Length: 475
Image 1 (cartoon, rainbow, N blue to C red):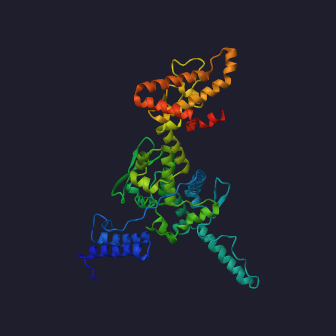
Image 2 (cartoon, helix red, strand yellow; image 1 turned 90 degrees about the vertical axis):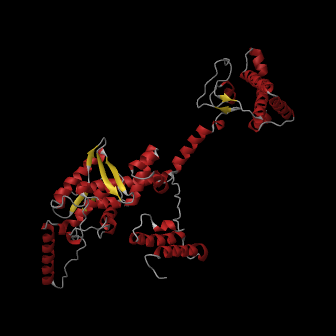
Image 3 (cartoon, rainbow, N blue to C red; image 1 turned 120 degrees about the vertical axis):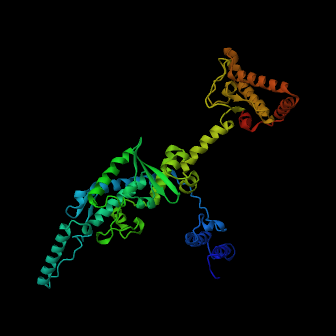
């Protein structure tokens, strides 16, 4: 079809319908792939047509939702341990790559808290893998050895960006990841931050940092926490010493090959493997920017239990936080389930007949001294608990009658011994309590009187309530 500014929107929508037809009918394209095609072309057309809303929103293509699976408590713990180990490694790099160390002799030895030492050569070939001279050509070997030694000495003595840019980039990357892990700045924002765009405002925790977020179409505020403030201020002094002539440039000015400034982002930089390679040599797992941010968001969400506070702190809408960043936790879900049922379904809690309106046993004021004390374990104790509530149903009347029959069996088993000691048995008091309840229910209305009569007939027929049938039949 012929494309023009007047027809491109309608043609684009028809093309998206064709993609959707391939997904639903042709079955040769996945829904996520079709949405990816439409989103990329729509992104270009949005800028050509200067649209305020995305063009793909006017089509029937939708990005499929992927529901994250809940992780086990062990996997969640391992994820936090890996992230903490990576954070400690970043701090070790920041400590070891000082100004004097970067401009010092090579190789640079960085001690790590896991007991290892990281050796950095800053672009210089390591001395271990250098090939020995050929004995067949002694003169040529001596000349080659002399030239190699001279090159290594010249490289080590040259204190410039050309020879030390790998060390500078490694420190900048480490500081960038520390920033992304603390206030929750994402990679795109961290790369675009400039020295002249920061506005520091003292707060209770440290600093307030105001910047602009393009995806949000507005300003955002980040907190520099008091624990991270010293690390961040140390980096600012380090950056000022390394780049004395660039006081208003990028906050993290990565250098390209040969020490030339570059505007490329971390994941598009030719030196992006520098930090990964250092992690491999140090035996520390590498945590990417997205995983680092997700871990920080979920850690704060679980520690606070407040989605509104977490969303405000991490500069997200609450719907985005719960729909994109939240990762379900099996342990947290189990705890929330127990708390929910304990709060909203108290009928499952009491061991005796009826329901419970409280969370702790509380004996009634007129309970006899020989009566069973309520302890949320013994069914008879519920009869003398202030939180016990009768239920207006035939099932509850049947349960009370069956429980009274069970207590009569217990009283008959212990009746002879009690008669000799002239002691009132708790079972006798329970029978009196249940009888008083049934008499009150029977006298309250004709319908409830029929319930009591029906329950007594069922007991005579041997039809006991399921809650007490096993104990009654065993006695």
